[in-house]
Length: 174
Image (cartoon, rainbow, N blue to C red; front, side, top):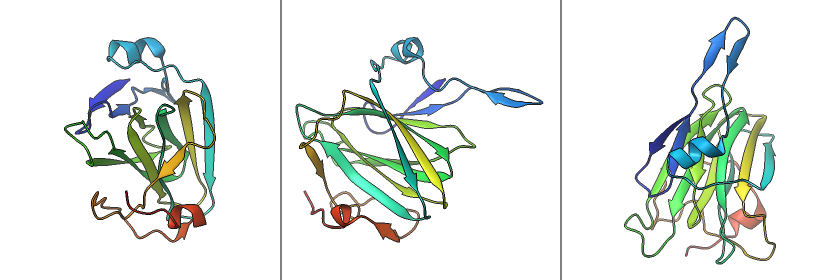
């Protein structure tokens, strides 16, 4: 795996290293040792799948309140997404900065999002599935979020969302 640092401390784009032949390819999706060698301490203890029927479905921007912050490794196992992380750590030099990357089954990229960052994504195709590896385990009642179009953050989404949950649509600005 190739770990590419982003403008946000601790957020890494994880590029696969493909071993290809006539059958297709093989690549590692997670290796604790390789993460540790890249200076990332992460041992996932929970995995989730988000299935999204329609293109331009928006999920986010979500995070858990302290002391239950989540660390996530996010990949798109079917379809395509624009995946976003926002630094919400007030003492961070990149506070309120965002990064976004296209993740798909074809490019096999993943986005590593440390605790203290919000996460959201916009599907770019119908029938999109997103696979999350997380740590620690989810603790109900500590869910937080802010609007996907918060002007103080200024995320440049590649398209206007068409499907948003009532919960996400009702989120305010921080």
